[in-house]
Image (cartoon, rainbow, N blue to C red; front, side, top):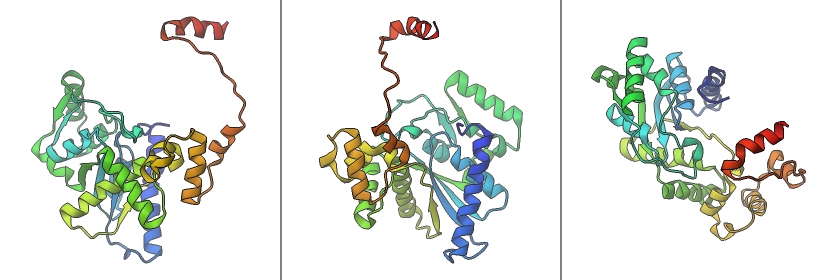
Length: 269
């Protein structure tokens, strides 16, 4: 279920309430006091859920939008201009390698005063020209957000530093958020209690994570890297990965691109 589906956005809204309630229960924040959230995102889904949670009354302070090198959202939040006419980069946080953030039009609808016509016009501009610019009044409605991005080196450095300081291992997407949160603190001196949304397991991006904290193991076969990461992090290997070791090989067909139609026909008999 991609985050463009409401079936995913609804439980994501719940995560924000859950995180806030846990902080209040633990005494980390006084009940009713605001909490900031820093979210790594490319499609603007998870952070949009946080925005909806705030609209529903949750005491959310700032929503920190963390991007990787594909920083179209950063520029939009800072300038009010969404310009997808830029170089697309493949990064170590691939779930955020996006230039057209499909959930953003939901935010546009809200900050345009729930105007379908205004939203539609801007989306048509994006389809036709590859960019659009919101009005000054709409820009003021972006005050809930702060946007910044992390380079590939900054992402790796965030993984390495957290591991060095605490022994805790994060994935590349969470590392983008950690790096951007550091920039936010440096720029704003905001001391508000903050939740960093950790959006994936480090085992999903083993090679990139291991290259950041123990580059001497970077050339090992993938499953051996998994073992090393488990030892370094002192965590169990997820079952889905562990089962790959003994899983039978079901598909062995290889073909060139121009042979794909005929290969599919062969499968279908």
